[in-house]
Image (tube, rainbow, N blue to C red; front, side, top):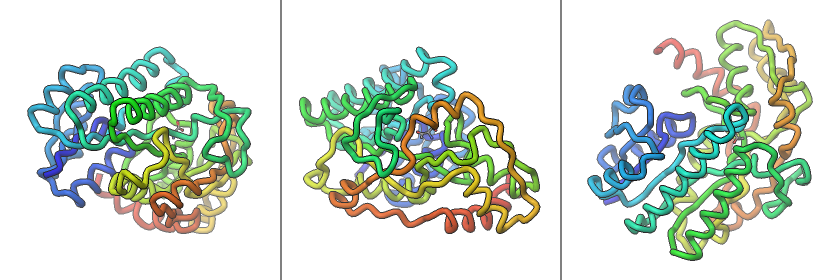
Length: 317
Ligand code: AKB
């Protein structure tokens, strides 16, 4: 039987991915963990444990006790928050991953998933349709840690045979949980404001194109990558992954079609400088070729879905 340990389950991706793992493998097969005890209230449908990935002994103990066979390591400090405390971000992002990779080697974990990001790219990267192997010169500590992490994953696969798989996620947009500390997070906040009848002040300029993805696609991509035969995985750093690309003015126009009263203002802050170094769109042909990836949601489909479902979600809170 699979025993899946999710580290950082209380975050934006973890909240939805853990539910999908439970739906796929059953509640007895999944242990959700987070460093915040308060995350327990989310996971009424599976086992939960409070776990700090920096405490290697505690992670090792849980792996042994629960006979863990797979690890999804999601805990990270995102781009904008990382810039506020770079050394702390490096510790969480890098040391956390090294603990997981070492323990995966030691305890012969069958598979590991670790998310990377478009933040590995930088100002010298081609902006449009960014290729898998494009030059990478990240300017944020988050991007530097993701790029180093990708190479550690590749190293553990090549040197120790650890079956670690990774995706370079674009900005993830979902309505079930709120992201924290990312540069792409405006694209979540804007829907919350719109459905609550509020206007929105955007911290990016109106014409800033960034790669984005609806959460359902992100969860689907993760499950698909992890279910693929190991022989199909030709990239052990991390796969480029594309969903859609849009600017703040384009998402605002989609929302206005549903809420004609909605309006947006622009007040770019330090996050603009981060966004300016990232790609506008991504070439994900390797993911398509190797394990059949194809995104289902574009901007209009995602907007309709969120605007239909978010009010009901908010009313239950
Ligand atoms: C961020 O904005 O930091 C993240 C990311 C693109 O990885 N959403």
